[in-house]
Length: 348
Image 1 (cartoon, rainbow, N blue to C red):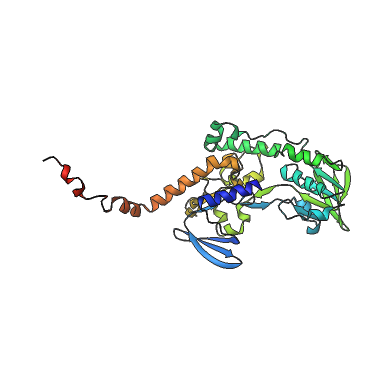
Image 2 (image 1 turned 135 degrees about the vertical axis):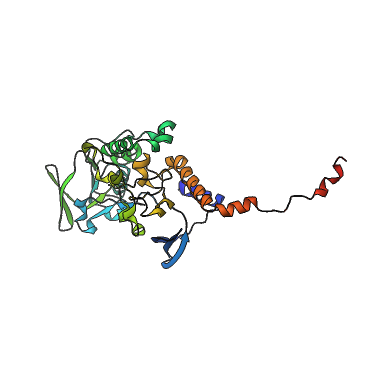
C-alpha cells in the first residue's frame, strides 16, 4: 500500500500521464519509426513512435514458467503464482507448491492463512538458499562495470545463480513455518503427476502423494519469440545462444534464450543488417539478467540502467534530428535588448 501511494505521488509530482486499459498488441517496424497496434478500452488503435522502452516486468520478454509435469493436468487442478488464485477455495484442501523462491513461500503462506488443511512445498535443491549469490549490488566496482565483462564471465555468474536458485526472504519462510501443517520437501523434484478423479497423484522420489491443488511458484521464462507483440521480428533478435558457446558443463538452455543486449539495453541483430530498427527498442525488465548481472527492472537497477537507456535515446534522437537542432542553434533570434540600453554609457 505504501509503495502504491509513493508511485501515485511520483506520477503526480512529475506530471506523468498514465493511460490505463491500453494493450500493445503488435509492433510493426516502418521506415524510421514503429507503428504500435494498440487496444484502447478494447478498441483497435494505431499510433507511431521512434523509440520503445519495455518496462513491463518479470514476464515482459517471456511468460510464467509452468513445469511440463503440471502442464498436462487439467487447468482446474493447478495455477501459477502469476494467476489470480482463489485461495479461499483452498480452505480444507491439501495443496502442493512447486518451487522454493519468494513467490512459492508467499503462495504457501496465503494458502495456509486461508485455511488449507495442509501445504507441502517441494524444492529440487537440497537446501533453501540463505545468501544472495549475485552480490553485484553490494559494491560499485562490480555494479557499474559488470556490463563490460567478457561474455564468459557474465555467463558463468548467471549460471552460478541458476544453480543456487533464488532466495526467499526470511519473513516469507517464517510466515509459512508458523503453521504446523506446512511441510518442506528438499531434493524432491516431481517424477510424475496424473489426474485421479478431481485430485492430483504424484510421485516424488520413492513416495506417492495426493493433492487437491498445485501451485507453481516456478518463476518465469525468457524468450522473445513467445511474445506476440514482437512476432514481426523476434526471429532477428540476437540471443545469448547466438553469441556465446559455453563449456559443456556450463550449458543452460534457459540462459541461452535470453536476449544479448547492447550497452543501452537495446536489442541487437542476430545477423547485422537484417533488422537495424532493433536498436530503437530498449528493455528494462529481467530479460537483461545474463547481460547485466541483475534482474533489470527492480529497484536496484534503476540507478545504473535507466541513465544508460535515457542517454542513448537522447543521443540517437539528437543525432537523427541534427539538421533541426542546428537550425535552432544557429538561427537568428530576437536580441534580449537594443543597443540604446547602454548607448549613453559608451565612452566617446
